[in-house]
Image 1 (cartoon, rainbow, N blue to C red):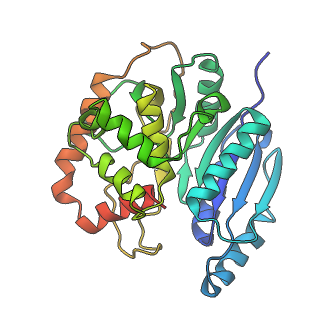
Image 2 (cartoon, rainbow, N blue to C red; image 1 turned 180 degrees about the vertical axis):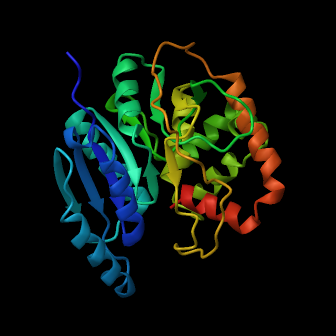
Length: 301
């Protein structure tokens, strides 16, 4: 018997145009009408944000096109990290699995199919910790699907068996990375400063749940399944956030064709890892430092 479709946990705050686009894209998925949607709406953090939060809540209160819609309206501002950690834990405890999206992620029509196919296919495979829908605009060929070590955060899914491993203490994660001499591998051979992001989280310079999730899965040698053509586009680099600058460095065309989930070697793809390392190294000089800062802050919201 085919397992029921995984529920979607969508995290929203105060950006109505982004939330509309995210919902409109999700509704175009063939499985939307058979999928439960749980929307976590964070509370306003100050008086200035109350109106925008109210507008978003009015919109999400009228969402249709899904099997069911449940709204979890936070009475106070938790911040994205606490909201996601708490929300993912809640949904995993109830359903055993979850598809996670934020309000600035636009999905392809085949996104839900890929997520559910992969969740079902790898349900009993302990080494697979998550599924990811985004793939960077690399200029090198990669397989249709592949594994990378660790976990990512732009349109992803997991099971309760993996999420229970989540380590919220960044100090423990950093200590283990250093003790096992894994910081170089963790940083993709110096291509991206993941270790610095973790240190910044420890120091209170960011509140990233994502870097701790990635480090948890990386240290446990868990793999994430990714598609060779992206099923998610991040529209949050449009200058609408707190840090008001724009960048299209991470913009991708959405994959037009459904992606087949099947048996592939249960190991990190050296081809995909090399493509990602090359992407970060080749684009870094052309990405404004402010845009790189924006990325770090988005990972650390």
